[in-house]
Image (cartoon, rainbow, N blue to C red):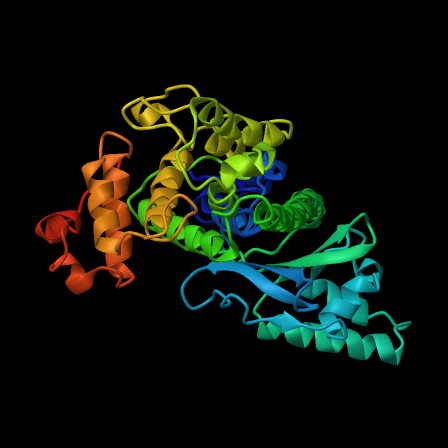
Length: 425
């Protein structure tokens, strides 16, 4: 029995492109959780990937407004080799024909959905009522669509008025055209994407503000803590950031907070010292038992500042537990081993090293770098996470801070072992 024409078309659709009903549901399900993604680049890549995979197009790109560049930039692009448009290859100012066309809502004259196909432009030009200015505009728009080899353009508006971006849709793999119901769907998808992207942008702006607050708070620590100076803060940030990068490359999973925030939290570890009397902080001799009891409150005092803020639990944990020791002999809770948060384990190594290699009120003569490293190694499994100490020594070596790569120092006999490939738990 010969298949009907309709059934053969369905077979071809399944082979090359999902029928609209198929990919519509798939994309609806895939985009349902977009608003929860707060990383803009990851979000945009996901949108492009889903459309290419589900609709099966030659290529897809997203043009987004870049506030820093005051222009629209191709932020993400994906597709078949030879068809994909390189990222950032397209950059359009507000007076570009495509941007003006959608920003001024001329697109709604062409297609009721707001999305535009090349065939819509040709169809509209056949009307005898098109003025010369609009005819020229449409001609330029068609030329640009040809240049970028796109069959459809889908705008995304924020609060229905501001053009946030444009979705570039290449040809379908099976050569079929976009139907009107597909354009309607992509406009709805664009509205969802715009909300998610705008949400991520707002989150990023809040992050910038928060990092500014962290910077201001860290500078304020200088006023009450003689150990905490701008150079100390810079050194801690540099060392902590280097450790985080190295650990990431080894597959270590970090808490679900932005990496910059995680690192910034490390050098805020002593913020609770603002509640410690200056005579204790500045004392050059040994502390009395009572003074020690007061000083040991600073991790909890600092953590309580951030525990009041939703989403900063990991920041608070780093501050609260940075005085814990790997063998469980630290404070405030006597946590042991991997029960101590990763950030706190990094902070204690970085801070201890910097304290040893620079003058403090209670110790005028700093250690040499090699002596400080030897001290870290001696206290592996006692005060410090042994694997993280190894990573820290590697960081020092890569920065050229160890003599002869460690060969002429007290740590030279184990240096090669530390540099051998290993996985940090």
